[in-house]
Image (cartoon, rainbow over all chains, first blue to last red; front, side):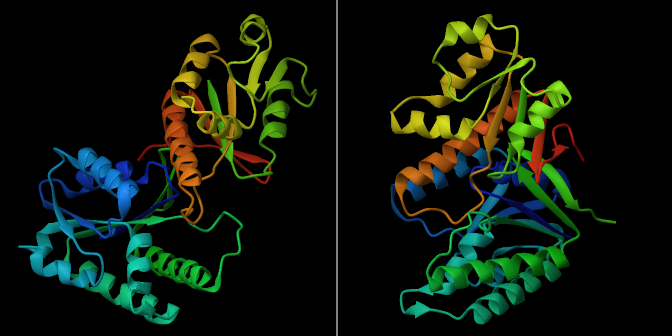
Length: 180
Length: 137
């Protein structure tokens, strides 16, 4: 089963995603797949806040900033495990922006989706958190626009695959695609 | 307290005023854009207090080094039946500027706390409101 959870910055999507994952995974092993590359004070604070939030909720943390299909090798029994992947916006950025340059939008979309498929097929449940970066009405430079388009395409493909899609608004979950 | 959120220029205030007075605008309401100013006046009013552009007030208080998180709660203690209106500001690319990031994060967190306290939360798009509080699954 696959679930997508989407929300903006400071929407409460992470907190909801953790509660949701706890609820659906019952006694199964839960993994938190952290995709953020940590830069600077802001980044460290964010990691700290999220770690505190997860404390005592029974997640094992896997850090994997690119090639997320490799995370499967670090899971004992995938078919009895749940992964909470946070966050697709970071993963897409990491797959696109390299020290050596920027990868084309199409390649990023393809890589991310094929990796997601590997996880989805092997796991009992995959929960993907993604970010709504699409509503500030700003026209950015070409490389940022390519990123926005890539993330938009990824999100659409993910929600198409997903059994459930939840949007989180001011901490309130709104079901926008309901499982059977 | 009621919380009304939505994007820029979605008709949130008009929606609220329309709902309160059934078309007869401002009949029983008072619209303010700042909290902590003219407090006395606000407390003594018989009218429904509507705080419009709450996000702008939060932004101003952050830039002035204030603590909007505490100030809004003090305001609510004195005005438990008010209506708060705020833009949703987190649905974009994370800004490079540190102040802009802080503004979005803190506004988001404040709105989450307000939504928890609110009896009702409505989200307005194109002038149409949806009640989103107490949906559960």
